[in-house]
Amino acid sequence: MDDTAPGSESLQWTAKPSPWPGMPAYSRAYEKLSARTDFEGALQAGDNFFIPSYLQASDYVRKLQEAHKAKLQSLKDSKPSSGVDSSNRFSALPPSSLPLGSHRGMSHTIIERQPFSIDDDDDDSLAPLPSRWNKEDMGQGIELQPDDLGVKFVGLKSPIEHEASVVRADHYMPPQCGVYYFEVSIVAGKREDCTICVGFSTKAPHLERPVGWEPESWGYHGDDGRAFPGQNVGRTYGPKFHYGDTIGCGVNFHDNTAFFTKNGVRLNVAFHDIAKGKLYPAVSLKKPNEQIRANFGESPFMYNIDDIVREQQLRVARDIDHADTSRLEPGLNETELVQNLVLQFLQHDGYVETARAFAQDIQAQKVALNTDPNVKIDGLNIKDDEDANNRQRIRKAILEGDVDKALKYTNAFYPQVLQDNEHVYFRLQCRRFVEMVRKAAYLNMKRGLPGLPMDIDKDTGDAVAWGDEMETDQGESQSELPELERKMLEYGQTLQAQYANDPRKEISNTLNEIWALLAYKNPLKEPQVSHLLDRNGRVAVAEELNSAILLSLGKSSRAALEKVYAQTHVLLEDLRQEGGDGAFASLHDIMNGVPKAPDL
Image 1 (cartoon, helix red, strand yellow):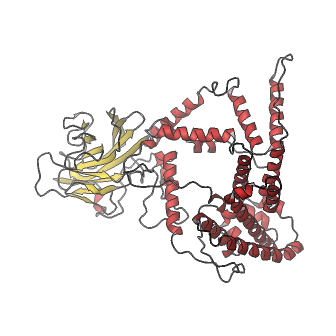
Image 2: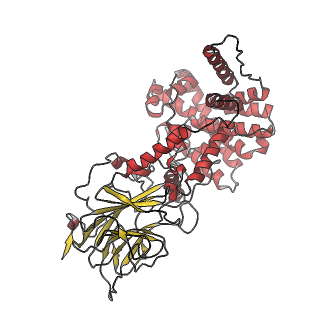
Image 3: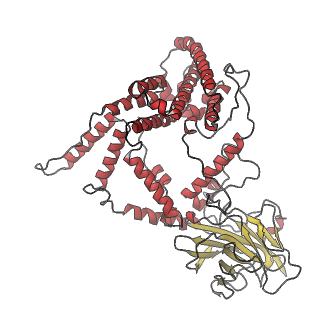
């Protein structure tokens, strides 16, 4: 007699399954983490992107998220977008398509690398996580639920002894995750003779043989509780399972092992020395009316896999903390090495006065810690570099929003740089336009709403900056605003005319982004475009111009500290390829864990 798991009657083979009864509350924070990512409302119907809770700290999955976001933005940008509101007083600018709500600021458009692509499993692109069963990769007699998570075996016309039907997931389990885990709940089947098998395989095994019976296939069988490592003679492993049970399968790519869980309880390691390859979650069913439902991480798991992954992350963090740095730079201990890297970064980027103050502070610390008056403490010599001083002037002008002054200094000190770096010049021009819009928007707000800067602080965190930069009384703002708006529109028209025939998509996209600012009477209050006015955009432009100047002087465009960061990133990428320690370390999380300097 067939049995059905409690609550499964409500499924009715619909796209929304009922929650399984008795689900333990291991990770209630998961419910927030596993919510589908909105990406500013750009998700389309049918989108099924999600991040399992145990992979929230994975750099690989973070790249997946960025690629997914870029893909959605690309789809959005490819659609016809609305134009400038004709009623807006800024609409004198020639009409242009306005990709409203872009997730990227104008200042990041040109220099961004191409986003990672999410492509088929047959190439080496960034592979997505498994998310559903693959209707193109399943045996006969299998029916999938509309959401492709539920599986029902309806039987074969000519059943053969030992024959079963297999279905595999849509994507393989990426080793770069370090650990991958999924669960299968049995919602209907024989109580005494459940022939369902849960496991994983490459695409080589046939779809008419139970999971684990053929090479490159590993499975845990419900009828006898045996584990089958690629052959039809298994070994005693765990308890039998049947309807109402939830079987989890975890693959640890770090040590090439696999384990299973039953109803939230972990069993022993089932397989060792798993062959490398593209391994897909898989199940096989044999008896008519057997039904299962998969959970690839979109819903909370019964087993607390989060803590297992966290243990691996802590293990790697301890190894990093205990790493020996004495051979990196002979003669310097770890603290001195870090101090030298920071000092060189400050000098490299033109923070001459800050570098000098930092060196003096280091000297004072060494003197204070010295207990032997006969030992001479050598100081750090900060050379008064004319180029560094010039670059500091240029950077300071950009960070203060005075692009005109920055252009003046650049042409005076380094006249060839802007001619040889057209993209840098373009970004400076765009930033100049943004600063004009920024000032006009502020003056408009100040004229209409006295005392508004403190309100801006609540929304954008930029009130102090506005107050510092815009020391303008009511009368001055009323007289200055019309002239500023006129110059802004003239400059915008000049900029558009200059690049009207430029075929490069990145140019037109950037111009469209900044034109979008004129579609609003108050761009500072519009989430779709307010990020373009953020002062962080100044930093990106200043850094790129500084790098171009350094290259023109025959110097490295990156400081030693930046090179160390980049090299560490590459090393971690290499270490996580086969599920190594790099899968459990994240530079993103490490940097986010550094305490931020208090606001002055």
